[in-house]
Amino acid sequence: MKKIAAIVRADCGGLGSLARSFSDRLGFYRTVSLSRHPGEHYPHWYPRNRVAADGLTVELLAWLCDGADVLLSFETWYGDLAPRVARRMGVRTALVPMYECCPLARAGLEQTELAICPSRLDWYEMERTPGLAAARRVFLPIPFDVERIAFRRRRRARVFLHSMGHGGIGGRNGTQRVIEAWRHVKSNARLVVRHQSPLPTDDLPRDERITCLSGPAASGVENYWDLWSEGDVLLHPHRWDGLSLPIQEALAAGMPVMTTRYWPFCDAGEADEVAPEHREGWLPPSSRRMAIDVTSTTRQRICREITAHETTPQAIAAAVDAWYDADISAASDESREYAEHLSWRRLLPEYRRLFDGLCEAWAVGWGAAPRAPDA
Image (tube, rainbow, N blue to C red; front, side, top):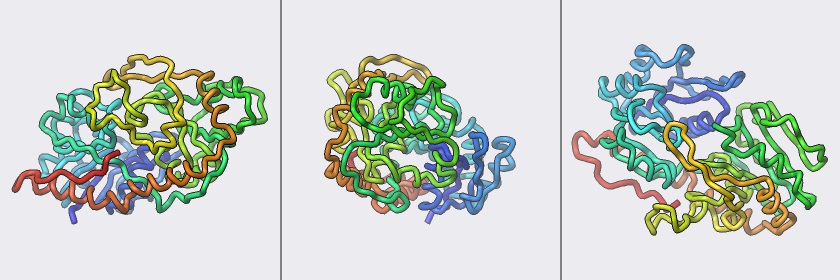
């Protein structure tokens, strides 16, 4: 078994949950951790860890890579030092990129040998990223955590859960529009908003149907899998993403998802530059049917230019009212079945095979690609 060292987040953001899940399943050889959210620092998640209190240094990275076969990072290399040190020490380099936070060049991309793309959108973007021209770019979904996240069959669409978390860059998760939507919701639908950072508005509707949970009650402190015990439908009208951990976690809990109707979550439109065999969205069909229509698109720049898919409080309200009190029992079952189809139990061998191939590449070439299921 290959020894995988990793740069990880030790906070309750999405990258922390993602890295923790990989560490527990792959058994990281060593880790160096960073925490980027105030008050959230849990380095004990990682058994052989050192904290990068002053950022990544040559000394920390040399310790991290000493004896390792692969150095892995999620979303970013946090500069270009880490892959340079790894390459000098004969350690292979692998990155799980998120397209919106991946520049076109530099930032360690030229020293990256393997890009593991968690969605078809990420894969399409990485295929046209000049900095990764020498890397192997592979689509392989992020596994669903069906062991930790308990399934509960949801029966009627009455409580709509919105998980703001830390909000995402540029209000990506649509929290302000969700809250504003309840000024237009005509049914008795309840809204529960969980947030770790302050809400984006002080002008909350005076509405007994709305409950906002902040701090430990919202985040479960360390255990993200406790977020999904209540609610019937995840209301997640995000503006861009290829990967969405809240969506995956909600599905694993048996909670259908109401999100914005755009690819790769829902089916591609005729204008999208997507190959015919990749046009189907990866959400279960029942969640795709619940999607909220896009009212407009804008072009925005984070680390590259991306498309933002906009919707309105009125469109969100109309979708909520259309599904309020509907029987979602079958959709709940389908959500969990889909999560199990892409669980760690099923995908862990493909990840191990991929890292084995990376380590053997110098001697025998890459060989066959992992057998990732369509998603």
